[in-house]
Image 1 (cartoon, one colour):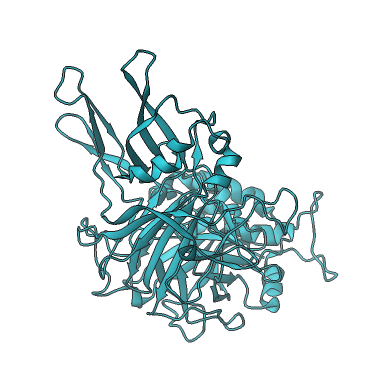
Image 2 (cartoon, rainbow, N blue to C red):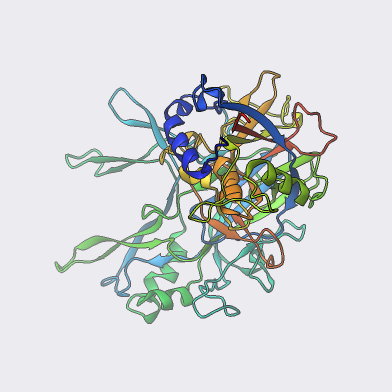
Length: 562
């Protein structure tokens, strides 16, 4: 008697039952014949390779506002070249009464924006020591290189709503490059050059070297009331007080400070402009969404007691519109759309909205039809049998499906340095896979029970494998697509295209739009690929690539003996 299976139900159970031991191994476990009992002679297991097509997709203009975090600095990629990231941001007052008291006088003005940090040790006094590994790019050979930073008043008004869209459509800003070194973005209809909209200088060009040292503040130093406070590592610098006196203090009790809308019309924001200081540099990911990211004006106002003053603060947060601008000097490789018929030999993944890869899980429609014929139960009349719920019955059960991706040899060698822990350039890279048709995570990602909210490098290890080295000394990644294929077989899903991007945080699943992409297959890209400047180079699916390193889709399945 011929046996059939409902693959979706079984594979979901199997996934959770194997999660415990897969979690202990950062490579995927190959499923052998013990899936259904190794002594059960009615079944056998096998593996096949499904012909796929993988090709390059150049990203011309991706959304750079509405992100979870923002890059700042200069990053030199050995494989691609230099990327510079600047930030344009609105600021919002926490005090919207417009009242600063009587005779306010500024003491100091400080901007502070935390890095992403984790505690990795404690000193002899029990104070936390930190790492900013999750926030810092370019820290190799144990030395963090500086970059040059200037802060200017921005005179360009950042709209909250898109006048060309529906009433509630938010304004999207996109990356844009005309080949110049200026900081351009695109608003969907025209380019904006923020270098041409610079107002007053708030911070003269300053050398910035990101540090994992905690911020230590001392009040009432050398007195009985001395207090020492320690906070997480951050970009922190004092700003020009004259500018803030003229901009804020002089507007005491005015309508400009009385609410957020009036304030944003009056003060259009800041331009954090990064530039290279030398041949090398570094870049940081800033946590601008926290309340600890702010500009604090420390000032004195008259007290109710004659002749005395009261210390006060006026705080501006980065809760308004914020965006990244990128200038790219990609000189080492040429990024272009690839061959969607035969696939490309070399594939490029580059962060900061530059390049991704499209993988069609079948090389053509005939290959997809053959796959379906092999795995579904025929009804004998040119169709396939279904159960009472309308799901197709399967003659083969997919136990595991793995997209195996090999890193190109171009990513190895003397030009790719190591960090102070001996980890090479690509060590912390993760490849993030998503369903292109729905611009959404894959079913395998949804079912992945290995999660870490504090350590994204070690999160989602079942669906998105870490970079490992195989028996032939080739570096590779494995992407699990078991449930994705089962959805095609059982529920007749048409989602055959998978997008691959480079990510430093696979927990971040929000999408970013691609400008003017309505007629394209790819209309969105994971925002996680925008907030990393790094890149990698992979071997493709083209037949000219050596079989040992060619990208491939392996399917491990169980079928009944006939």
